[in-house]
Length: 516
Image 1 (cartoon, rainbow, N blue to C red):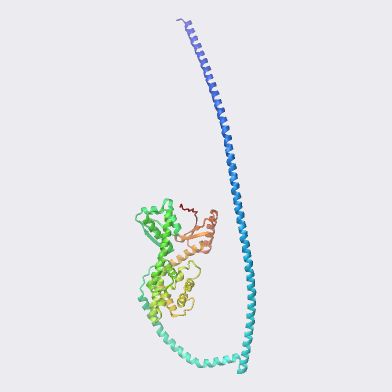
Image 2 (image 1 turned 90 degrees about the vertical axis):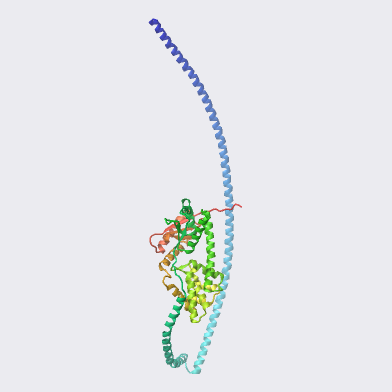
C-alpha cells in the first residue's frame, strides 16, 4: 500500500470520527433538552402544588387564630364577670360591717353615758359617807374630851407597856428553842426522804441511734439523688447522720418528740422495706399517732407509780408530755415523779396529808409541758392549768410557790419547794450546757417561725442551719429570697450564736387527688 492510500485512509478515519462526534453531540443535546423540559414541567407542578398547599394552610391557621381569639374573649368575659361578682360581694360585706360598727358605736356611747351617771352617783355617795364619818368622829371627840390622835396614842402606849417585856422574853425563848430543834429536824427529814427514794439519773442526749440490718439499707434510705432522706428530714425536722458507722444511722435533734417520731418512722420503714417519699409520709404520721398514745400511757404510768388518782384525763395527757421535755438535761416526767415521792415521804414524817403532797409534787412542773407553745413562765402556766381542771387550792399554791414566785400558804407548798430543790441538786441530775443549747435552738425556731406564710421551722445541724417550710399559696418564688434575707437579718440582730447560721427556705407545691 502506497503513501497516498495511507493518507487517504487516515483522512477517511478522521472524517468518520468527526462525523460520529457531531452525531453524538447532537443526540446528547436532544436528550438534555428533553430532560430540561421534563424538569421544568415537574418544577411548575411542584410550585403549583406548594401554592395550593400554602393557601390551604393559611386558611387553616386563620381559622385557628379566630377560634383562639374567640376562646380568649370568652374566658376574659367570664373572668370579668367573676371579678364583678366578687367586688359586689366585697362591697356588700363592707356595707354590713359598717352597719355593725355603727351599731356597736351607738351601744358603746350609751354604755359610756350610763357609766358616767353611775360614777357620778358613786362619787356623791362617797362624799356623803365621808361627811357622815366626820360628824361621828366629831361627836366621839366631844364626848371623850380627846381628839382621835390623842385617843389612839393613849391606847397604843398602854398596850405597848403591858406586853413589851413579856413579848420580848417569850420571843427570845422560842427563838432559842427553834434554832436548836429546826435544823436537826429538817436534816433528819430530808435525809430519810432521800434515803427512801432511790432514783437513777441519766442526762438526756440529743441523738438516737437506729440499727440497720445491713449497710445496703443506707443507700435505700438515702434514695435516688437523696430524695428519701430529704423527705424524711423535711417532714420530721431532724438531721439524719449517715457516716461510716456500720449498720447504724444517727438521728439528731434537740427536740425529743421530733427525734422519737423520726426514730419510730425509720424503724417502721426498715421493717416494711418499701422506702419512697409517699411511704415515708405515711410512716411519719403513724409514728406521730404512736407517740401521742405513748404520751397518754406515760401520764397514766406516772399517776399509778406515785399513787395519785382522780386526775382529769386531759391533765394526764399534759403530764405525759413531760416524758419528751427536759430541764437542764433532766427528764421532767422522772423529775416530777421523784419530787412527788420525796414530798410524800417528808409529809408522812411531818404528819401532813401524804396524798395531797404527792399530787402537788407530781403536778408542780405541769407548765413545762406547754411553755414552748404558750407565752408565759411554766409556773404561771401550770397554775392556770390546775385552775382550769379544778385542782385543789393547796396544789395550785404549791405550783405557784415552788420557785418562790408567791408566798407558800401551806406546809405542803414548802415541802414541794424543798423536794424540787433536792431532786434538782442531786449529783448527775442536771446538765447546764445542754439546757442552754436547747433554749438557743428553741429561740431560733420561735424567731424564724413568727413570719407570715411560714408553716414550720426546724433548727438542725446543732443550730448551724434553720429549715423553713413556707406555704406555697402565701409565699411566692420571688418572696422566698426576701424572706430568707429578712430572717437572716433578724437572727443577726436578736440572737447570739457561734459561727454562722444557714437559712434554708423551702417551698413545695403538691397536687393530690383520689381515683374513686
